[in-house]
Image 1 (tube, rainbow, N blue to C red):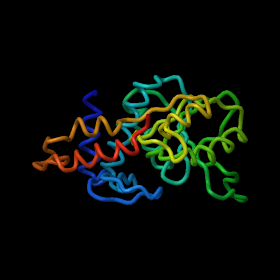
Image 2: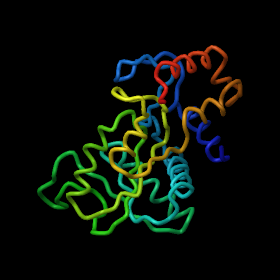
Image 3: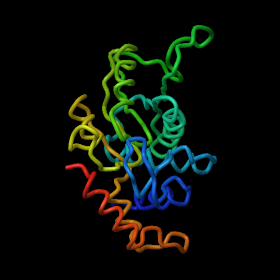
Image 4: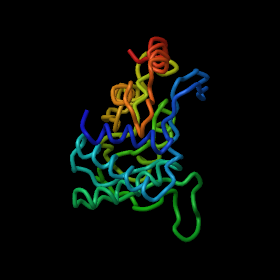
Length: 225
């Protein structure tokens, strides 16, 4: 695990984005951890978040892309703050683009926010976390309807590493198999556990033996194969 990844794990905890306890997910699963990217709300948090995404994209995909596409709604600020960070960290200007939930028919018309898409554009899709392929199912046809673009890959902040509702593969693995582009995350839950188990963050042990046992039990039942 690189230094920036360990920093990101602690950053998620300090920002109260990643929490441990007893949570019921949309899927109905009882999970010992929960991530809510909507808790990034301050200027500092968004600046740092963009930097972590930019570093992960740079390390995974290099600089051979043109556009960061953030699906509405949470992907909109992610694409913006990461495009800013990419310019500052690597001196490369990439455009941001997002979709609207409804097509706008006046002023800045259309379904897209930010940059328009052109034939030949190379895109990286940026999201918070993917627990199913539903968002990509909605996003993919929108992108292909706008221009003949190439999707280089998908980047999320956290790979939950759990199987989907219908297969033994993780959501990211299912997306790779279905659409043929690479997927990646800033960190995985394996990284999170490694960084936090019996280690202090701001004087507090975040993952103690009890929470670690709950995480292990969760992955025995729901871990991707």
